[in-house]
Amino acid sequence: GAVVSQHPSWVICKSGTSVKIECRSLDFQATTMFWYRQFPKQSLMLMATSNEGSKATYEQGVEKDKFLINHASLTLSTLTVTSAHPEDSSFYICSARQAGEPYEQYFGPGTRLTVT
Amino acid sequence: AQKVTQAQTEISVVEKEDVTLDCVYETRDTTYYLFWYKQPPSGELVFLIRRNSFDEQNEISGRYSWNFQKSTSSFNFTITASQVVDSAVYFCALSERDDKIIFGKGTRLHILP
Image (cartoon, rainbow over all chains, first blue to last red; front, side, top):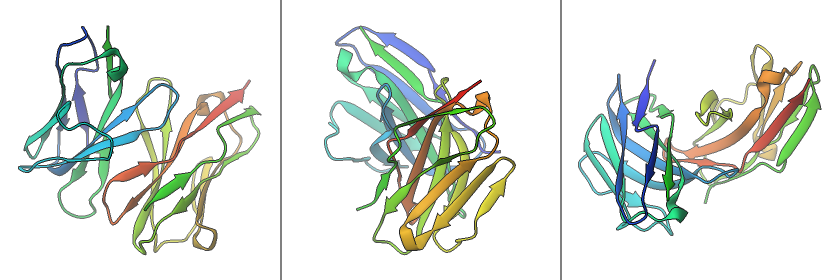
């Protein structure tokens, strides 16, 4: 079955540093990947839509200069949190939509980011 | 704009009871997809069902069943004979034309032994 991985599964970084999270579709090609953020006891909020080879589309209120998204291949998208602050601490989840019918989306296991 | 409402924030039932989680959605599209996901304490989303707007048949999978009613824009989820392992947060979600998936706020389900 379709598998999406995320790396790292958890990361702790110091305030002011940048951290990169990878999202990979392991056994299918994904022209589109989505990035979500989930604060404790809250729902998943879509941050951005990433299309292979083009710029990401950010949801309203998401700072594109702070959350850099790169989707350089059909199996890999990265999210870089730049100059992280404690309020960026969250659970980041990606999903990958397979290229072609039936366009199923598969979610990664998530990355827990803690900024100290 | 698309929207998903899960009015039940938290539910507690005793094991073996049946429980229904409500989901009401809004969309202007005639083509859309509805989902249910389970999120256990580990955080990883577990896919339960995907249903397209043209298929109103109810679905049953083991102890799980789903009732899709376009007339009331609802897609409710019932767990029969609940078990402690069913304790989790359950999200109803919607996507329009295979686009981004928008989630409801979730219902935290506690199954008490």
